[in-house]
Image (tube, rainbow over all chains, first blue to last red; front, side):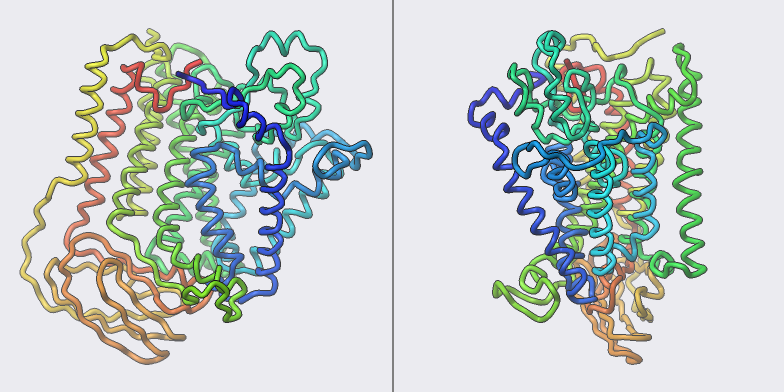
Length: 441
Length: 168
């Protein structure tokens, strides 16, 4: 069994085709999103007592990495509330597309396509993470700015311009969705090719044409293609993990850059949030200070020069060991696939180190979401300290080792020979050892 | 030479099973085999830790297994706490005050200690590190990573092992 089409089950098919279940889930996430912004703006200034911090950066951010991406690819994007308002205006209706559509519908500039801006956004999150992740007000302002930017862009550009090209979380989920076990594909290519009306493409908020889909990176699993296809030719498949990472799949340079930024961010976040170095934490926190500029400089040099330089060196070495001639740019893009399982598992390991300890903060903010001394559900209103158990430490080791195992397999699969895969495995091993040292050392 | 293994040769299921069993057994052995601690005579140690927003100084402490450790915690600014993972050890220091507590370092490994009293935005990340004896888990992790890299290579010989292989 290599693919398992969920639409073969009539009940599942009916649920996926019906817009109501998805709409209700999105309504819940929109309500949660709105409450998060209000809690951030008007709740306690102490981050660990505020719903905005605990639910965004501990509950949701952990759920994204531990559940949504590994088991559902871009499934979070299908219920994300951020593009909702813009999408309603663009299609002229809340549940169904209407007649009166709003927006200029311009095409996104060609020179801004790819994952460059998303990678840049993720770099910015890393640079300011010590403040964004701990200040409820800043978190609320960032979320508000994101939703307004998304709305503005949807009024100017066609489809989900913000999600496709700007959203840092979209870049994160898209990159790692290639390793995920869910995909939308056509059932019979011939049926699509013979069908002149491209209703699926017209309906897709992501601008994807299902017949041409080779990667799940840019498919938000919104199911609009499934709903409008008059030939019942869209499948929602469960598939083996990592199916998009193949010797013959096409990748571009911006994916390599995004993958490297993710690796650098995983290292830096592990050092700041799980490490014992108080000076580093303070440097990352005191934005604008001399120490912060030093931190920012080191972070940017590591993320933009050292790690990419080491990667480029390994890719260049690997290229010389093969027979197929590729430009360095194409080789960098081709081998970027190896960064996907490596980064995904590193982020999962970091999340285990981080979230398992901090889950102690979740119940108290449910009881007292604004940090005003309430006790809504009669549970403890004081956060415990949290501890990392021996089990969580061993689990982190296993997850990192599994990531290296998986990456080795992907690297070998996309290489011409064992010998050619060695430089990239050296790169992946060095990164894994770095993560091990930061999390377990 | 093109030995691309996107179409790996068919391998007998018994060989695949043998590989999986050996690999898992080796991984379990690496993770759980008891390792000897370097012998050391337990001593009494007093460690002074200064807590200020949002750091402990020193942030990294090394003791030997069996040591009787007395911690003097002094807070430099606001109220801080010190809670040690996996040890039932907790201190709370008012600003400018020193509190002391003692524990026996009877568990080996690396343990984080954390501020246990909300002291500001970075409070959840105010962390220090206590190493008792050798960090065997890091050593195990390094060896396991080596096994994973070799295992990843070897596993490509088995077409049926499709943990990360999309087959059309």
